[in-house]
Image 1 (cartoon, protein in one colour):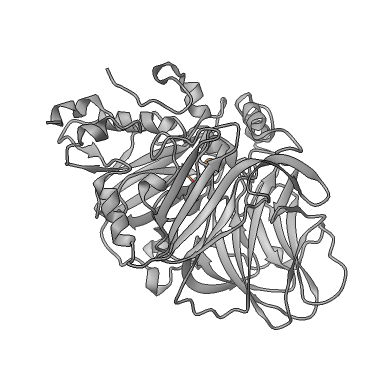
Image 2: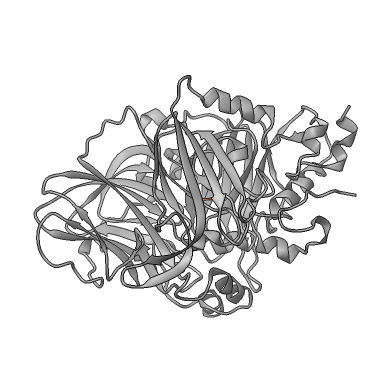
Length: 533
Ligand code: C2O
Ligand code: CU
């Protein structure tokens, strides 16, 4: 008989699969791993445990002698936030939404002492960071979820500079106010800008509309916007995404926690170069970004530098980040728009370098329909471009589902039933994404920054999240240099909750110790038993 790990808050063998999917990211991980263990014939291998010596060695290689340790106290708790003349009861990190940024230098060690003041168990996932696996925040896989009133210390080196963020990895917690920027500064940054602003965009329902959980119930029951576009193929479509913009109708869209009728203002002076670090923290909404009266030069994608490219607008999908610089054109009040793609509403801010009234939220600067950034525009900067190499292993990752019942699949099955991708440390890995659904999906890999392969096979950007449109094939490559158990999933939080997730499992020929096999994190597999001496 296969044994399952005990999961936070439930008694192990009695849960239903429905319950598992409801916890996407919570329970399902350990089932997936167990099935990996029971897998193929052929030489027996073991999954590298999240806290195994392989993980410890990889972390030691990232640690620098004398590295600064950034000690942070971090709490998640219910709070009431002012969204701009409208209060909402929600959950957040600290007193604001977004939570306050964490800022370190590349090579520093983040030590975040986390206290869970929420009524539900939760975790923190440090999106995009190549961190040690047991700090990755995937419950039932890399740690047990932190119980209400519980604590957990996340401690990891942050090796690569860039714009990152953090959020929970349990259920739909992300669709509340639980998100904040994590900025890793580059000590060698050429710094050709005068000011920097962080721009965090979100779609908002919590405390003013239905709860995220009620939206998911609707989707499962065939109610709501997704059902409408399923039934009729109708509703607004995005030309860029070749699909609807999302599955949930939101009451509001926010930029740095403010609705568009009460936007934040970014102070600037004529002629200054401003760097915006743009983060899409939404659960279900891509945004079209433009700054009225300006072009934007894209310098970084998902934290990693690209060969700079100047555009009028760009689309940012859920969990993606773009850093752009602009040169302030004059003395004025310029709308920075984040229009919800194919959802016909917006978030906004203003860049103020002069006096004058704030433009109305209905303003649609012409840049929104000007030259838009396309994936082939993005090429990794020399310093971070992966050399061409033959992949050691290639995996297909087929995106499917989304029909009645709202089950979403990778490789034909929802998470918990699909077969983990087994990799070995040091291998060059290629993932070939294909999409047979009618939706676009921003596909994210934990713990690694892959290189997108542009059309014709040329090296694209280094990213950790990439859009896969309907009927499109997208390939990415990376070096498997961060051992452990990692998630691949759609960063639409509702699709992820509907099963659109897969485990990428580093395996080893090393027999696991009995202590490792007894770990509560799903690494127990009966077929491993003969290997243990
Ligand atoms: Cu933002 Cu599993 O990730
Ligand atoms: Cu998706």
